[in-house]
Length: 162
Length: 161
Image 1 (cartoon, chains in turn blue, yellow):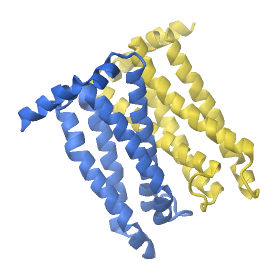
Image 2 (cartoon, chains in turn orange, purple; image 1 turned 60 degrees about the vertical axis):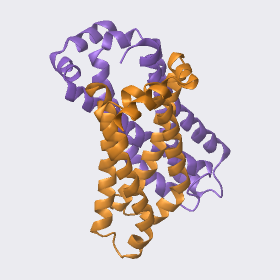
Image 3 (cartoon, one colour; image 1 turned 180 degrees about the vertical axis):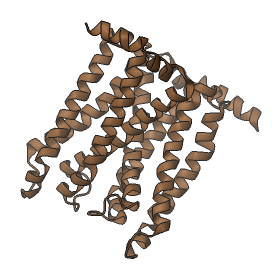
Image 4 (cartoon, helix red, strand yellow; image 1 turned 90 degrees about the vertical axis):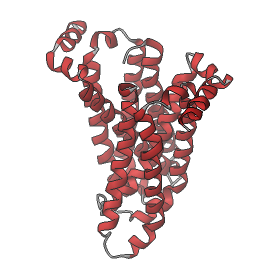
């Protein structure tokens, strides 16, 4: 399994598109910027809902309204982030697949973060019907905030551990 | 004069420790990136509201009131972490044209932030967002994405950072 993953990584990073990006002075930073821009949209819209769940913005939009209203932009941010992320990964796929920080980020933190995100999006209507956002909602909001911070941490640590 | 300050910053033992120690250097990066995500993401939400592309049923002034404190806190954290990282290689950044471009774009982005925040209440009372408000909102998105692009170009094109 591990061997075939590394072989896949080796194959991917030698695809023409990956080699072209790696060899281009302008393409690589543009791909990075795409990843960061998508992440800004994703994290910004997710955190807005999380802070609302934590009761940080008591005076205005309840979590459900924000979550519904930002739904499209939230997932658009995710798609842009994944596009940029996949291209970044492709350039050095073999290296990333042997990096513990990257494997933690992609294999553990992101799936857990996504599951929690989907739970929050689904549960928000029920939480709103309750008079006050209850403990589960607050804990979920905080957990998601910390999880995406954890993803950013794992990403930053990639060059330090590899 | 400026070069002298940059040299002094770079030679400072605390600055050297911050940038030379793995966990502190990583922490600075994490703060810089995460605060950037929150800052840019929140500004995009405000701008999308002004442009009428999102949250149309949400009161614009209320949205701005709730998001701008987080935006300014994120800018502060981003600036502090950025300054610490800059200080560690201050003389290299001093000579770096692309870094100055990044700072210039950030100044423009913050100016747009201030205009948006100062005028939001007034615009909110009008029957529709004025055209020039939408222009500022569009420019704001452009400036913040421009700051991200300039930020990644600094290491990519000059090897600094």
